Image: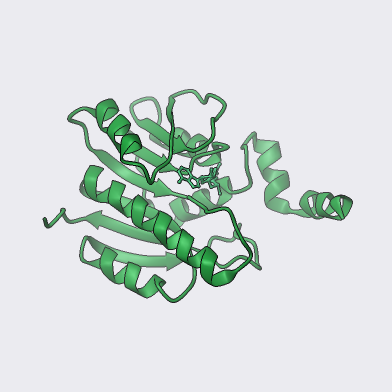
Length: 204
Ligand SMILES: C[S@@+](CC[C@H](N)C(=O)[O-])C[C@H]1O[C@@H](n2cnc3c(N)ncnc32)[C@H](O)[C@@H]1O
C-alpha cells in the first residue's frame, strides 16, 4: 500500500518538478499557475500567506516580490526558514494570532492575502466542506482587516453548498471574484481557488 503511494508520487509530474526546482511541495505549481493567469502578486508587494507550511507558496511569493517586498507566513506548525520570509506559528482562527500580525505590521497594510488553509480531512464531504468554509471565512477576516484598498485575495475552499454564499459575500468587497482550478490540483480533489481582485474597502 505504502509502496504504491510512493510509486504514484514518483510518477507525478508536479512532485518531480518541485523536487528539481527546490520547492518544498508540489502545491507551488498551483500558485505559479494562478499567478500566471491572474497576476495577483507584484514585485515589491507585502504578502500574507495563511496555512503556509511547509512553505512552497512562500518560496514562490518571495521570488515574485523580490528584495523590496515582504512575505509573512502563518501556520499551526513550524516552518524551516526561507530568506526574506517571516513566520508566525499560530492558529488563524484565534484573535491572539491576528494581534501578533497587527503588532508586526504596525501602520502598514498588506497588498495580497493568500490562503491555502486546509482542515484535517475526515473523508466526509459535507464536514470537510463546512470546515474549509470556516477557514476561508477566517482568511477573509484577515483580508478585511489588513488589505490595502486595491489589494487581492486568493483563497482555497472545498466545493459544497455554502460556496455560492461565500462568493456572494466576497463580491461586495472586491471588484472581481472568480473561481479557478489549477492544473496541479489533484483530479479527485474538490478544492477550488477563489481569486478576488481589487479590494474596495471595509464597509463597516
Ligand atoms: C495544504 S497545506 C498548505 C501548503 C502550502 N501552501 C505550501 O505550498 O507549502 C495547509 C496548511 O494549513 C494549515 N492550517 C490548517 N488549519 C490552520 C489554522 N487553524 N491555523 C493555521 N494554519 C492552519 C495546516 O497546518 C497546513 O500546513
